[in-house]
Image (cartoon, rainbow, N blue to C red; front, top):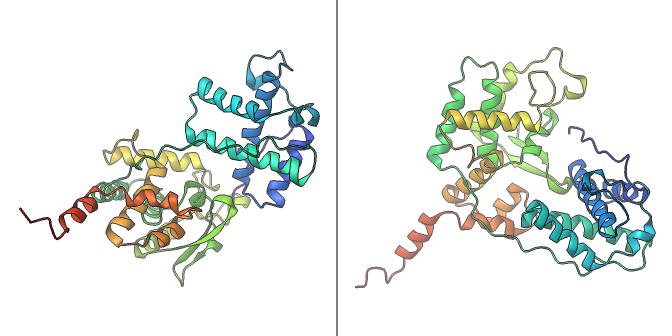
Length: 330
């Protein structure tokens, strides 16, 4: 897996102890630890402003390094609610963003109160998660998906065409996350059993089975993948950049955007994550995939997250109504 840089130099000691705990004891992924660090930095900076313990008006410039645990012990549930309102009012934060920060705050105070005993009362004990908007995910139709694959195929004069085609093929067939694709190493692929192990959210490992299209695309890319002068830390990475390093999230996002544009598809509407939605939708719509199997394949912790794909296909709803035995009684 690629390294994730986490800036902890300006943190108070108790925050860094919490980050160590999440990484080593809770076994959270580097990306999750980075999110905790970002969320809690912002929260603690807000608290110093909220308590009028700093004259700094720009929250980004507030220094929290010397913040004491005594200040933390004064935080109440109302103060946390004030932070969530601040996010909405000043940054127009979506419910999903506020929900993530709520989760970070809840785990943080549980550590301080119940694990370390640094504070007597947990102000986040009754903290509720903001209600999320349930929206039907955007996805490519089958025709659009084939159009996208054809657009990548036409890159015959592009020396990265095999790589880019393999990337798009894996997204559309497997529904993996961006971080999962970027993190693929050769040792993760079982070529005999046609399967792939990836590390998903929460540092959880799962198996993705590879169909013929995926295996063909991977093998064609491996045949032309650079082997000389590859960055030492990236020598095991499946996908490489022009600099012969493990491909970055940003580069993959650029590749997907470029190919979407070539296929004449709206890049304001579709993105890397929408390709994950597309794979899930196509499997559910055309493969008669059991919802539990889809949950396992996508690496969703909750079945409710997967259930959004049961509502995306209006033709199924229409067919269900038309199949009613009373449909032709007039």
